[in-house]
Amino acid sequence: MTSRARRICVANNKGGVGKSTTAINLAAVLALRGKRVLLVDFDPAGGASIFLGLAEEVREEHKPLYTVVELLTGKPFVPHRYELAPGLDLLPANTRLSHYAQELDRDPRGHFRLAEALEPLASDYDYIICDSAPTLGILMIGAIIACPEVVVPVQLDIGTLPMTMEFNSFVVSLKQTAQPALRVLGVLPTFNEGRAKTPQAMLGALKGLFQGRLFTTSISRLRAIGDAHGHGRPIVLAQPDNRGALEYTAFTEEVIRRA
Image (cartoon, rainbow, N blue to C red; front, side):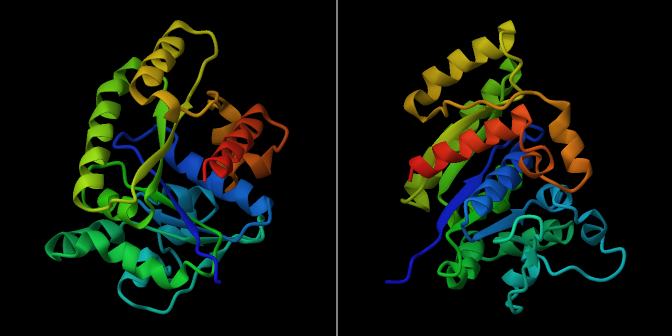
């Protein structure tokens, strides 16, 4: 029997919480474990694509880039091979996706288009990881329907709690109306500052809200993670012994166990 890719979406309706960072490191660790991984960038900002070294390509400075828009419009699948982690393919995004989102909005089945486009690829990979746009709109809906196991990175700042609660309600509604297979795989605390009062209070609030779905691992606020992005690499490849790399590796192990 042909195996089917496990489909995971990294999503939050607030930007700046480590969403793209989580997606690229999760994908890279899985590839390092010998898995075949497709990372789908479904955010017009192209953060995951840029963090994997495609800044110039995302801006299309030299030639047009094959992106998720090309896949959605039926062009033959041409992923970007990420050479630093054999087994990891990237389907990039850029600002053209924001324009195409308007067409998806007009299509009665627009929220299913990504799922339909990825379906023929599901037997070619062990994991499909999708980095979604940070807005409660057609792109996030499409990403979650296509990849219904949801990882929610949440910055440990009390100000993020109302939006996290809003996102949780959105997920509950989407499960009832469009994707019965949807489940929150887990909530990943990010930008942790150890024993500082606010992060600890936020951890307590998240435990109450999400109970057993909170990942044991949290990701520290570390400059090294951002520095790795500047060199087009996930921290797990740029500095594998760094605390951030070890945390993302531990987080990935939790994801694997929660299958």
